[in-house]
Image (spheres, rainbow, N blue to C red):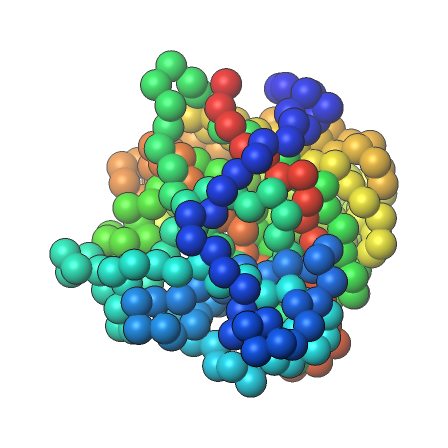
Length: 311
């Protein structure tokens, strides 16, 4: 496994078409630059984000598009969130591109260097997917970032960070779910104590607010309790995180700063179904917070110095 310090390089990335939000264009405050949420715009000017939806029993994540009105954007910026819009040419308000393939989960062109995901008034803003392909001769994808949170410590939900994501399974409805599916490997961040093998579940006494390796496939997932940190995470602390996933099925992560922890590297292939449903042939990235509508407190996840690559 490559060390966290080695992968914590800063890449300058460009997001294609980015512009300030409707609220900013009308003279409203663009918010605190440390909390920057990216939303999407289709060719007709409709603004949207998408929700990561978790099955209560298994924690399995699916995704669905959700449109955002100007009133929501005004409220976000009034709460100190800088909103930026990414325009998607050729994407209609029905979430379908010209060739008829579903594009309900549109891809960003690259990983932003600084971004945030928030839950505000019970609604999540800023989840995203970055499409990508594996690089010939390279077998391990990595992502690294600095991470801090506000009000996440007592929030009863979690964030999924996935690598080796199969973009095809966002756009083509494969079995068994016949819906946009998260297929890849990565980590889960937050409270997964209600899910089998989650940190803090059953006899696992590690703290609820934690990170651990998670394997995702079309129709299922698995958490690996041996990768939970004994100290857990804390709101307000800044963590430098590096996550690695390779095409052989091994996943690991390391954390420095607010705590120092290097996880074991579980072998996930025996848990994954054969064929397309369990494929590790993708090269995309996914960041998605699963919301809890009944929670009115603002939850903020801030990411900076984000970079990704292959070795």
